[in-house]
Image (cartoon, rainbow, N blue to C red; front, side):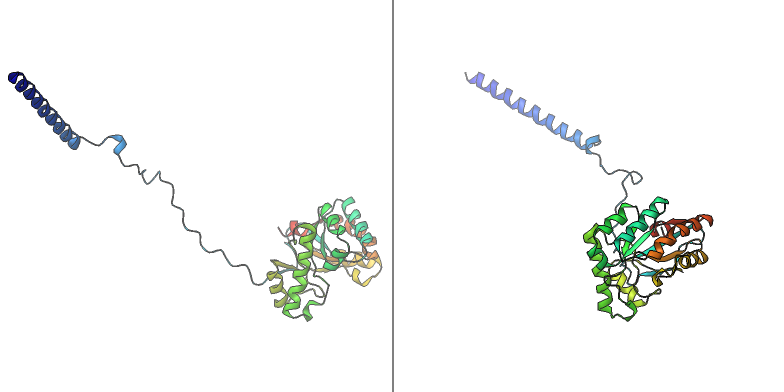
Amino acid sequence: MAVERRTVLRSALLAIGTGTVAACSNDNQAKNAPPDAASQPTTAPASTRPAAKRPAGPRPAPPTEATEIGHGPRTVPKVALTFHGNGDPALGTELLDLVEKAGAKVSVLAVGTWLVAHPEMATRVLKGGHDLGNHTMHHKPMRKLGAADARREIGDCAAVLRRATNSQGRWFRASGTQQTTPLIRSSAAAAGYAACVSYDVDGLDWQDPPAATVVKAVLDGVHPGSIVSLHLGHQATVKALPQILSGLSAKHLTPVTLSELLQ
């Protein structure tokens, strides 16, 4: 029995020794062997790595003063017929019907109180594919207004436009003046307008002259790129419009919206 126990014990020690040697041998082989693909670095070569995103810089500050625009480019055979939106809506609708029958597009710069009284006119203008913009809330002489009143006139009309159409429109025209002042332009910028739209042709319809006077004023003064000032709510304008449109066609000038002329 003692012999058997010594034999078993010797066999066990021999097995342990053999396992230890094998383990050491495997460790040495692992230390000396090259790393496998799984242990290789995963960083891609510089040429294939996506470019690192640069931190976004500060956004440019909005302009503190709008730009005054008196006319469009003189190199294109287009003109913008712009109408101050005020007066009898029936006359306005009649004029828009004539415009659309001729296949023309125009721009209406609306007085805020007019849109409050006749909100359907905002829909009518836009339904015809025309521009709708801001011509102040009460049509006051803006050159005589202080800063607070000027901002209020523009901002209140913008708010009316947003309620009526979900947009304050792209264009603003000052009331009571053809040329703007730094105060008017800064007030327009504060309300979110980049441009104050003036004009280079006065149709004189606000004086309620004979229709022939309006036709002559427009056709004698118009050039490629012209912005023409006219008015809704005046019978002479409605009567003059067909002759104005035919005269523009004879001059190879197409009436388009401000947005198309000034794009």
